[in-house]
Image (cartoon, rainbow, N blue to C red):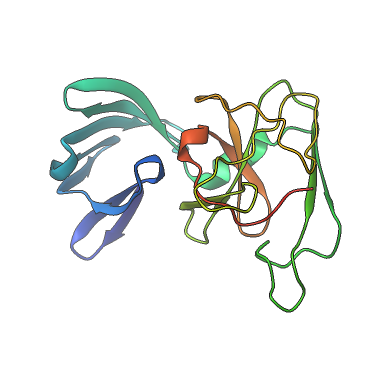
Length: 193
């Protein structure tokens, strides 16, 4: 969710990467005191939430087609404290600033060891914080990598695809900022060693 303030008040757009939708405008949004509410008519979506005292998150309820679920909104920066210390990254060459392959320098390979207890896969956030890319075996449309607990990436694909298991999200600078669901990850950007 991207919320911005301006001379005409608040505006907002929604990205739904798992459904392939980006920049879907909110038809109505308001912030009264510590209460945030918005509506997206074309998706039959409403949200009612309350900003906490620390102003670091909004806890609320997301409703679509009458089905409701809890949804907490946080700025991306607040997730950086959740980086697991058991995750180790090693780069075969100096990684490009945005972690994207350079035609001049060839492919940047990343080796990841997962020492956590969770399944993970990898994805990218763009400069605006939008989830854009995950990594697969290099074929568009193929599933992204899922890295089992206690294992590491390799040339093979011994990964378990299980909807709902966590994945890691990287910024373009390569920083891990949080977790999500594999269904939200997109196409590959890099190959993994």
